[in-house]
Length: 315
Ligand code: UT7
Image (tube, rainbow, N blue to C red):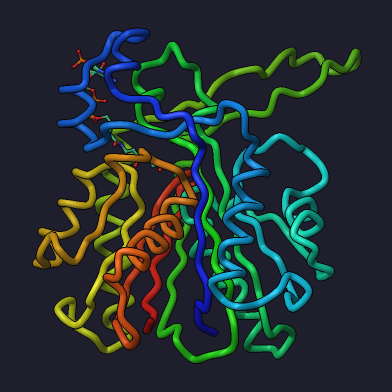
């Protein structure tokens, strides 16, 4: 398969570090030096669903396809407004597609997981055109009094239309122990026979543990896929790294011995948008004219699970 169209969508509301410093015991200086984030977008009047539909429609236009041409819709998402049905069912109906659809909770690795599942469908001949949408609002999972998490996340959506091709060179997915390093439990309805009580707790993240996992798994995953693809780090034109922390991205640059120009970033504008981070970055890089046909590109992401993934693709 190959990516034939890409699109993204972001909420209107900008929340700067300064705005956070007015409500939390934090500062622009701390957030910038520790994470690279200057501002993020947060849902105000929109829903996650609106971002997903908007990104999907833009990707279809970019691919010059119509929704009725789609054979499968995969939506990567952690939390949205609906427990049921799957977000993909609503996105599919809103854009006018008539095909099967599933949701996938791959946390920040959702884009790579979704592409890998789509590729398997291509390999067994089940699909021609697939839509992958990553739509997230992690900022709505947080305790906004908790400065350790509230400054990190933002909302956004990115989408990719996949069509037949042989552009995926190799993909690696991993899972490691450590689910309790980054998790949040559902707020379940009260049941008179359940003695456990309420589970209404916000996101829990052990930042330093996740940081260590991220840096080690990213470098390892990229080295493994480079080896599988029979490529050196120098032969990759652009590295798309999950936008969780600029320090993680800088570490990977150093470990691979590659120049910063090969690592586009938008974390400064959007913070961590979970699975949407990679397709939003891909879309912006493409629209900036920095992707050329035949370029070798690598993706790497890590997140709750703990899971990680890397993929090498010819553009
Ligand atoms: O996409 C999901 C994957 N998530 C990630 O990849 C996140 C990975 N982790 C990280 O990016 C970093 O660990 C963080 C950005 C979350 C935290 O940075 P850190 O350099 O690991 O800071 P820390 O947790 O060691 O905290 C250092 C200090 C602490 O104060 P004390 O104990 O030294 O007095 C924190 O309480 O910074 C304090 N702190 C803050 N200070 C001002 C934590 N958050 C803030 C804040 N503003 N927002």
